Structure formats: C-alpha cells, structure tokens
Amino acid sequence: MVPSLLIYSSRNHVASNWQTYSGMQDQYKQDTAQRSSVKTIITHPDYNQMTNDYDIALLELSQPLEFTNTIHPICLPARSHLFPAGMSCWVTGWGTLPLLLQKAEVKIINDTVCNGVTEGQVTSRMLCSGFLSGGVDACQGDSGGPLVCFEESGMWFQAGIVSWGEGCARRNKPGVYSRVTKLRDWIHSLMV
Image 1 (tube, rainbow, N blue to C red):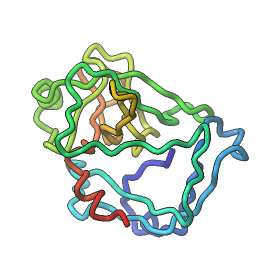
Image 2 (cartoon, rainbow, N blue to C red):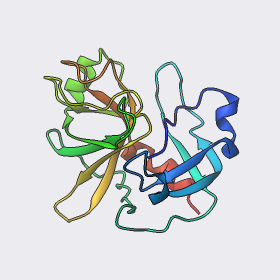
Image 3 (tube, helix red, strand yellow):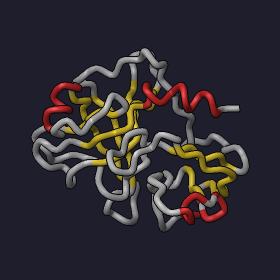
C-alpha cells in the first residue's frame, strides 16, 4: 500500500523521494515486499485541497510489478458500473497501527444519506462507506488506500480511494472515498 496520496508540498511532488512496497503485510518483513522507485507522480489537475474533490494521484513505477500470491491486479470499474448501497466491500491500510496491514469490511452507503450525514460536503466524485452506527472505518494513515468490492462474476473491482472523514469509526460519520467510476476516464487517459 502506498502512503497517503494527498500531495501538499512541492517536495512531495518529487517522484525520487518516494518508494513503494508492494505485497507487504508486516512492516517488520520488508524483505518479502517488492520495492520499487517511483518514476512519475500525476495529481489530478482539478484537485481541491479545501474540499478534497478530485482526490486522486497516480504513481508510475520505474519498473512493472511482478504478480505473486500477495500482489494482484485490480479491475477498474466502467463509468456505468454500480456499487449499490449496502454492498459489502473491503478497505485496507496501515491506519494508526504501525506494524500489520489491516483490513475492514464496510458497506456502501446510499448517496443521499451520505450527503446528509456529511452536511453536503460530498461531490459526485465521492462516496461514503462504513456503518452509520460507527465502529468500523478507515482511519488516519489509510489515505490513498483502496476500497475494493468482490462481484458475483468472481472479480475484484476498485470502488474507491480512501480520502477523508471526521475522526475514525464515529457514529454518523462514515469514511469518504474518491469514487473511481467518476475518475476512470482521467485514469484511462493517462494509461500507456
């Protein structure tokens, strides 16, 4: 998993300052991960630091990843792909726990409900996932990580990217994610 992709300072835009560790599940076992330098960082040109709209960046690695039993590709959903309210998905990240990769099962939350509990702060490029009762959520340190959903077709799709929230796992404060279906065309335009 890549550290937070929220890029604020010019130093963070320098690709040579970054490395990725793919397939790592335990920070004490970095030797089992594929380490790669970053060739290019591409932030969305419409990213708004105040609202977190268009909260996405792409990293081009200096060499391709080798797929293994811990490193797999993920499907990009079509623009018309639906992730219905109530669907179970998974968020992974390091969160505030420093050593082991964490995973949590969360549910997609209805857009109208999402907009209501965030007091109108979500745009069409965002979605909420978690539980209105709280208890399970992404947290600080998870930003930039994936929200993935397993479909009946037997394939995994990336529905979202951890973006922002109010606290962690609080009642009526679900996690807010960048909605991949709304950003897919931009992602696709940059793929070679």
